Every structure is written in structure tokens, then in C-alpha cells.
Image 1 (cartoon, rainbow, N blue to C red):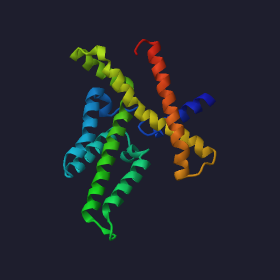
Image 2: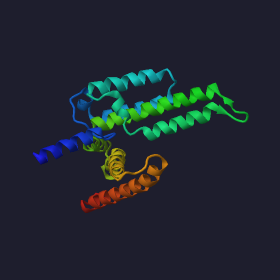
Image 3: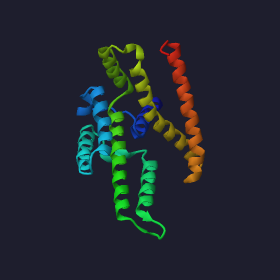
Length: 220
């Protein structure tokens, strides 16, 4: 009973972790990983390349696939607190003119649209990793390598490892943050000063462990 409860808690925790894979049956789960990778990463870049009229269209695409995958659209923004603070800071900086102190309407508009673009890009990445495993991405990239006859370059391994560190970062951050809160740690700047070095250290440890595992298998 206890093991069952622990398993359930781990599953719930993983479902709550930003950018973590979630099991589901929507359309995105049936699309090959390579196509999803190109489409969703392409979409996240397109919001910066095209005009503001493209943003509602991109938002509708993300909402449709998110709902279809059984993910509430706002859940894609888990872990985006730092991004929101950054966007607010940029918007405030662009919206204010000094000296003398005054409001810059054009700068305010640019800051708002930059924030929207960054938010859509973040949610597209979250949707990709919520519906695709690293193994699926590596298999798709391996097929592309075989087709292009560039297997010796091992690009699929390198790209999948690089992409894999994005959700891994959020997982480590959530675990470290939880431990920090359980010890009654303060919020705000004090929290960042404590957490950032710890998370960087754990990321470096994970990278070293991954490199050691790959080396033992003769992949490096």
C-alpha cells in the first residue's frame, strides 16, 4: 500500500514538474517525434520572425494541441516565473523615458509584444517535452542520420542530450526548491542566491554522470 502511494506521489510530482513528459492519447502523441520537434520548435521561432498578427494564430495552435493532449493550456507556463519577471523588467525599461521621466507608448507596446512572443515560445517548448520523450527524439534523429549517411557524427545523440537537459533543469530546480521550502528558506532574492549555485552544481553532476555512462558504453 505504501509503495503504491509512493508511486502515485511520484507520478503526480512528475505531472506537476515543468516541461516533464506526461502520458496521454492526443494527436501529438501519435505524430512522429521528428515532425513534432521541427513543427513546435519552428513555431517557437516563427513568433519572433513574423509580425504581431501571427501571434493569435500561434496561440490558437498551441491551445488546440494542448487541449487535445489533455493538458490545460495554462499548465504549459509552469516554471515560467523567472521569464515573467524578465519580461516585466524589459517592458518597464522600454516603457519609461528618462530624463525627464515619461511614458514611451511605442516602447511599452514593443515590450508587451516581446513578452507575448517569449511566452508563446516557452509554451511551445513545454508542449513538445510534455508529449515527447528523449528516446523518441533520439530515434527520429537517428533515422534522419541514417538517411543522410552521417551516423558517424552522432548528431542525434548530441542533440537529444542537449534537449534533455531542458526538462532536467526544471526537475532539479523543483526538487531543490522543495527542499529549500521544507527548511523554511526565505523567498525573493535570498532564495535565488541559495538555489542557483545548488542547481548549477547538480546540473554539472548530472552532466558528468551522463558523460561517464556514455563513455562506459563506448558512445564517447
